[in-house]
Image (cartoon, rainbow, N blue to C red; front, side, top):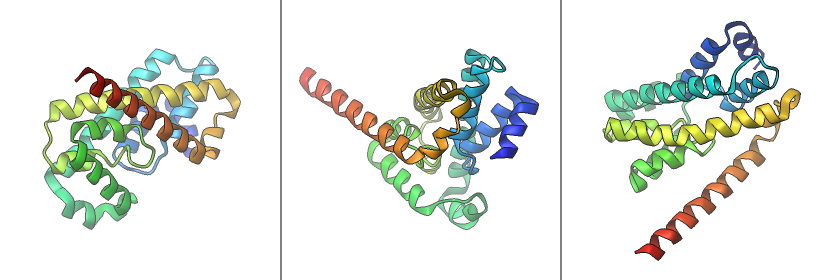
Length: 194
């Protein structure tokens, strides 16, 4: 964790971009650290909120597209053979794959909001050769709220931004509950209008 903080302090937005691309390519760098610290840098007037949001969001999409290409061109066999080198989690991949197979593009959006699944959802989309344009739209729609939330919490917590890491389990539960409620409300409105 310390090396990420030092890298971001030294290289600023370039480090934010690089670490977010890597995180979205499934290199195990928790976004809670990257975006939480970016929020702290906003609170201390080192980073600008809008620039941070643009850099982090674009990097998230770029990293997701790279993961999509790995899934598209290497498929499941490549992931199973070489995934251990990027700490590939077979269980999380299967969960992401089931989610994608059941919900298609909407799963990309939902998956981008779920800690632990968010970076893996790009692989099954690539394996399925899902439309790249739609993939990017769904990825963008899911990346923005995640980025806003973590950056804002890092800014709000200030010097205590690392609490995002300490309370990651509770954070995951809260995000999951909010997501389920949002999906249920959307579904009920859809049924009501039908």
